[in-house]
Length: 289
Image 1 (tube, helix red, strand yellow):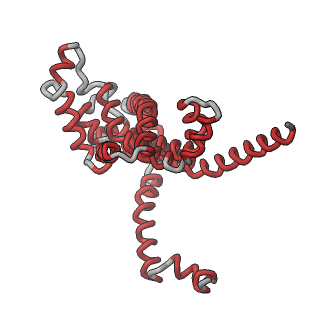
Image 2 (cartoon, one colour):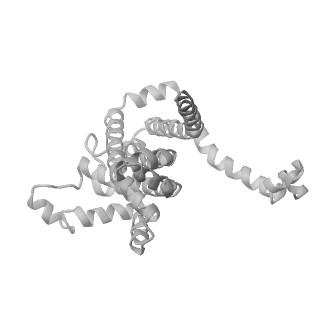
Image 3 (cartoon, helix red, strand yellow):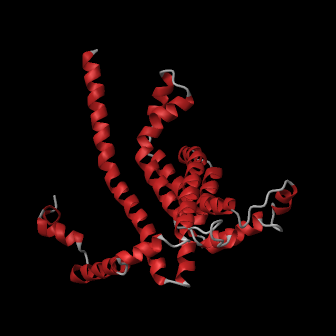
């Protein structure tokens, strides 16, 4: 074994390959990431929090954001889970092409997605006349908010879920089938439990992305208070009249993101503890038999 790798000093050299320069650059990056959030937190007083919470923009925008992001997550999970399984288990060129299409919204600017949605579902868009013929109009409605959130957030779930499903041993599925389980039962009783941590992470990332969506929503759904104005859009509106209110709105979204991140940090340990306890119960039950 290489002594440089086994000794504490060797481990330190591996941890900081550029020495003081690398450490300094890393420290600068940490400051750049943390300082704005710290400034945001320090800039709000108790009175500011009360003013923000009492703003007529606050409750409608928060409720709309929570409602639409939750619904978009449900629809994303329902449609994205079987799609992710197919992408994870298929080796065809079609699957790779579909995977590329699914991942595109991650790298495309949200404003471009908003324009694309207008060109698809707008009054003069690709599907606009057909939808108008049956009395359906999506742009500048709550449905447009929901659709924009799904388009920008679903790729995060599908990508994470596909990576999680790739860790499922196909032999386990084959054994389950030979024991009499149907394809659906084998999927939900074998594949889903193994991939569950990755599925939860993907769902959390998708929800966070939907909650913070701005560009596509602004162009496709507009910024109408009480109708299509989500929390990110309300922040922009509040900036035009009262910066303190915008700061409070920003703190609320930051707090929701912090809670989400904390949950993701605690998830692996909780899942490991649950798995260990379950294995112990199964072993005990086997011993009793």
